[in-house]
Length: 216
Image 1 (cartoon, one colour):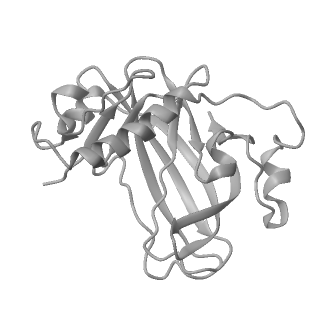
Image 2: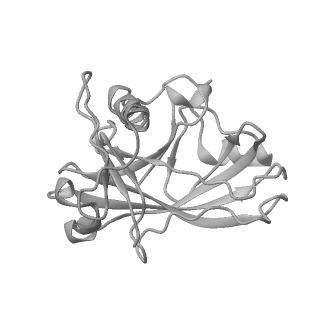
């Protein structure tokens, strides 16, 4: 059975609810729940803002030209390519290029596998292509982009899992070790009402407070 988990974040004093997609079974230790809750809280407490400085905000075409790393705070459109530093494990890091190809709205029925807590939520599918630019060994790596609500704030919800056939969260193959290797994947996000209109990359110290943002 395909499993997924959902975490709700609500303000500064957040209590995380970690649920299995198989009918409300609790999943993971208290430590795991606390870790995931922290991630969800950070997303809501640090909404994405547009940077006016030329040092932090550039156009997608300029940032990606010649493989130059895209600056933190860069605002892109769906279809644009960003070149980004990426660390998957302590011994696997390199440079990747991410192209968000679509941000698609699903239906509430798509969330059935996530149980009662997902009622009233609308899923969104962030589809992307990931390319190995640096040519380092990033085999079996996975990447998740987060959703951004209309208005610039985070969704406050972290979904762990996918919706088979609509949003499949794929990992890189064992051959994702050379420059030019690529794969397609999808990040699942959801909202309680406000539309999700953007996707953010916020991995690493430089991007945690100033993500790269793709919008429709």
